[in-house]
Image 1 (tube, rainbow, N blue to C red):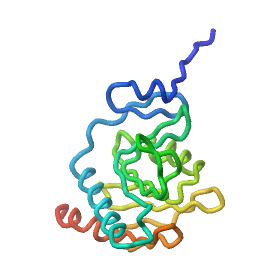
Image 2 (tube, rainbow, N blue to C red):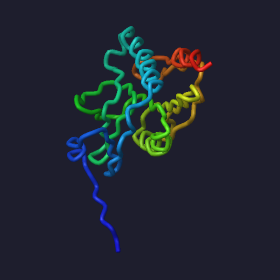
Image 3 (cartoon, rainbow, N blue to C red):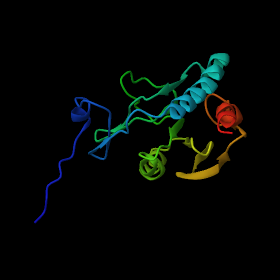
Image 4 (cartoon, helix red, strand yellow):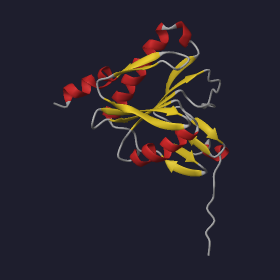
Length: 185
């Protein structure tokens, strides 16, 4: 006996109440509101990127966004924690692969962020994927090379320059994590 499993589309997704993602037709409930450290690390990333975008003329087509739907296909819509996108024309959701995606891990999202979204972003050729581990104050940075993610490194105090994007920018991971190291002692 086989059981029919209903697949959903973006038209279904946009009418749902609550916070969801849709991955290959299957609804996935998002975790409850993130802990304070998650929110604060997210704010640090946004601030770090936003101040550079404002200071550079070649970055006027780029923007940093938080919690914006990224519609990959009619049956796959995800909501990354942070994205850097350039030349995006979508108003209600992202329509093309962001240049950078940052996901901040929680126990409830770890498997999805490390495996499912990793493979999804890799397939969509998102240039950089950063997975942040707030408990360890480390970010794993991946760069797409030959259609596969190559690990650049575990970032804790390093500065990484994204010099192959339309808008050159750097992330100072020491600045991102500095305040949290001080409070964890």
